[in-house]
Image 1 (spheres, rainbow, N blue to C red):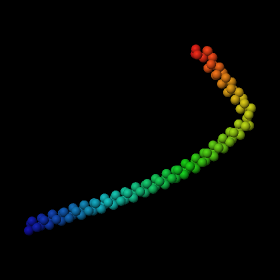
Image 2 (image 1 turned 45 degrees about the vertical axis):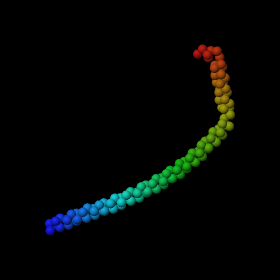
Image 3 (image 1 turned 180 degrees about the horizontal axis):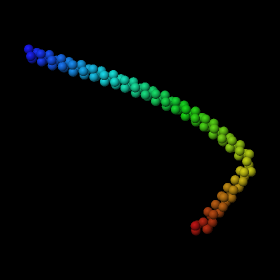
Image 4 (image 1 turned 90 degrees about the horizontal axis):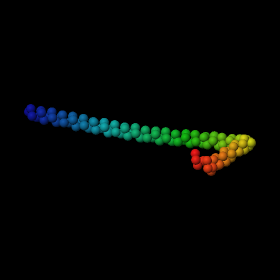
Length: 112
C-alpha cells in the first residue's frame, strides 16, 4: 500500500511538473508574440519617422534653393549696376596675372 501511495505521489508530482512546463511554454509563446508585436510597431514608427524626416528635408531643400536663386539674382543685379567697380577689379586682376606671368617666366625666378 505504501508503494501505491508513493506511485500516486510521484504521478501527481510529474503531472504538476508537466503542467508547470506547459504554463511556462504558453507564457514564453505569449511573450514572444508580444515582443514581435512591439518590434513591428517600432518598425512602423521608424518608417513614419523616416518619411516625415524625408518630407521635411525636401521642404528645407526647396526653400534653400529658392533663397539661393534669389541671392544669385540679387548678386547678378548688383553686378550689372556696379560696372565701374567690376571693371576696376578686373583691371587689378589682369595686372596681378601679368606680374605673376612675368615673374614665373623671368630668369630671376629660376634662382629663387
